[in-house]
Image (cartoon, rainbow, N blue to C red; front, side, top):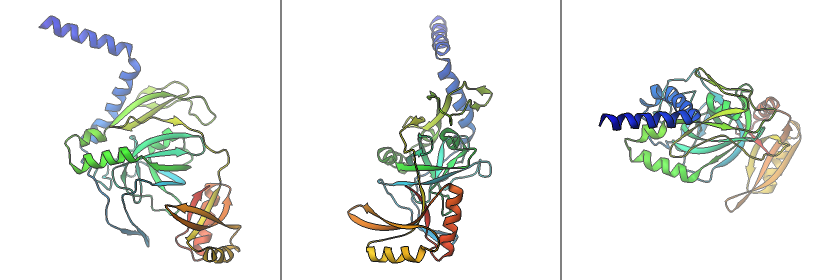
Length: 307
């Protein structure tokens, strides 16, 4: 028996030695997540309508959700505190806050500036600034390459199958849910690009040039991908959307003193809408200023959108 145990231990040692990167990744994941997520008791939650700073939000199950806009990130101020569905927020893990999607939901967030794309879990509410559509953890912002800038133009799309799976597991209140919430770390080599980080450091481990660390939640295995994105992206302020084009045209004329305006058609479901937009703005900062002007002109529901 002792010989068999010794042989087993030796075989495991040889295997792990030959897979040093995997061992490093697993060890790093354990350091990041053990202290936080073992105590996490997240639950499935959609929630009732709620009001923040005069604006009503209506949480709902929406497995066709897709939106483009501005993302931000949050970190130290909320680290270690409970999220809206009862988990413990870890700024060094991959997660996100959304105003209306069920918690947990799985979304794919793509940075439209550099093409980096990452699947992550929504387990919190926010952001509540009118010009942001999703708030990411600091780690997620690092992986998507906009931690220093603070914001990025993004596309956010729900991953329907995996979101349904998470909802099912969470609503059954399985004992495995805390394990599902824990993070796995994976080393992924990316092609070099001007926006790619020269190195990333997790714990005491410095990663080589053009290497990025990605983290994901089971049952999916998330990692940073590079996807094609449009070279030219434009930021507009959308003041309203109408079923009748004459109403949209009326709003467009009223907003002309604020800046260039346009009316564009959009099909949502089986219905055609006419969206009134002001812009474009040259940057997120300019978009924020233009949004404030539109709101001050009497359109409090205006928001930033990306074309």
